Image 1 (cartoon, rainbow, N blue to C red):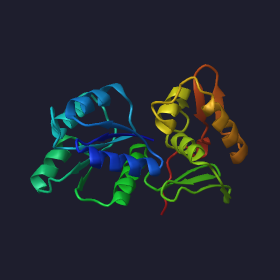
Image 2 (cartoon, rainbow, N blue to C red; image 1 turned 30 degrees about the horizontal axis):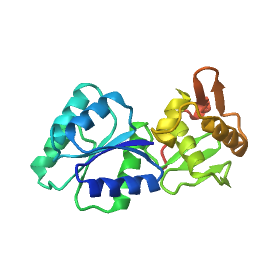
Image 3 (cartoon, helix red, strand yellow; image 1 turned 90 degrees about the vertical axis):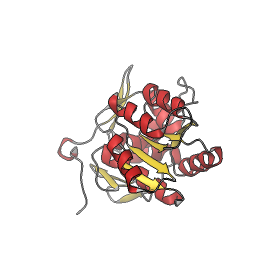
Length: 229
C-alpha cells in the first residue's frame, strides 16, 4: 500500500516513514503544503498522513482542495493541535481520522490499516475470498486453513490484490504500491512474484491479462466483502 506522508518536521517524517516501511507500506514524503497538494493530484495513494501546520499551504487547505477535486483517498490527520474546534475543522474538510501528537507508532499503523480496509469496503481485519484468508493485522495468510509462508513482498502483492478484487492491476501500479515509486517499471520482479504466489496459493485466482496486467479473480459467491461477527 502506498502512503503519502505530509510532515514538515524532517525528523518526525523520517520516523513515520521508518515505522510505515517496517509495517510493509511504501511511502512518498512531502515537507510542505504545496508539494502535498501537487502529489495528491498527480499520484494515486491508498491513504495519506497529513499534518495541519505546514509551510506554504496549511493542511486544512490541502485537504479541502483534494476533496474538491474528488481525491478520495483516506486521510489521517496528525497534529499537535488538540482542541475540538480544530479537530472539527479537519473533519469538515474531509478527514477520515485524527491523531494528536505525541502518538504511539503502532497506533498510526493500526489506524491506517483500518482506514484502507474500510475504504475498500472491508470492516474486518481479515480479508477472505474462497479459501484464502489474509489477516491485515497479524500478517498471517492461510489457504483452506493451512498457514502459508510468504515473503514481505509476496504479502504486499497479495494484500493489494485482495483489497482490489476483480480489478485489472498493471505492473506499474504494483511496483508503485507494493515495491516503491523508484522501482523500474520494466523489471520482471512482478512476474516472478506472481509465479510464486500462484504456486503457494495453489488456486487459479490470479489471471494474467495480456498487455494490461493481472487480476485477482474473487469467487462470485464471495465477492461481497465479509465481516466477522
